[in-house]
Length: 251
Image 1 (cartoon, rainbow, N blue to C red):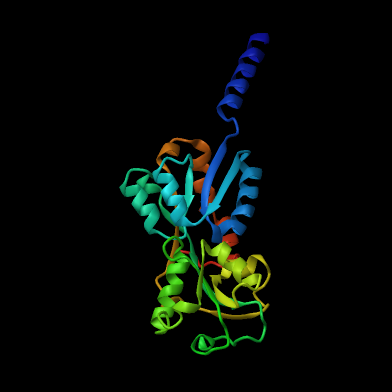
Image 2: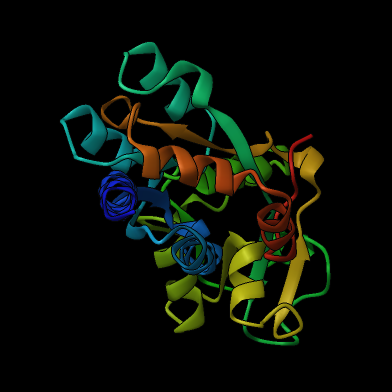
């Protein structure tokens, strides 16, 4: 009996060592910071692992990964950068999937500045229009596409101020440094400002889909905590959370 107890104890100690909690290092686009905080909290509760978040523009994270930044998972604001990492052998090919599709909103905290249309962009009621830097941020690329489709990009060039990412763009507008600008719907949902101010929800047909892809980075290909996180991100409850945060979901 004593030998059996010792054997059982040995097995328990072996499994506890095998299943030790780990840390998942997730680099993510700034538009997804709010839902990611809740996702990280839920993942930590369910798995016992910890989540370290690095929030920046997709372009900056992409460059950091190319130069060896020690991330495990990349949640981009587009699909092209994860695909490029796969092509370079820096990410696991069959791990890439679309975790969200972003929605773009023209927004101002001033409640009577404009109605639910882009008509204000053709007038002289504002001096500054904020958008994320299109070289780094997919939401900025989408905003440029919308302005170009409206035939206004060149005409408004002198009024445009560029945030480094969508988070800084939102800050420009909310603090009054820009009177209006293009932000992510998820940012308004997070700050409970969907019903505050003036806004125009841009039709998705006016710009390329803001398909936001996740990818597992090659150094974490065999890391259990990172693999668990990627599965968790695709679970039904988390997809519901993402949808409620102001995103569309890929099929």
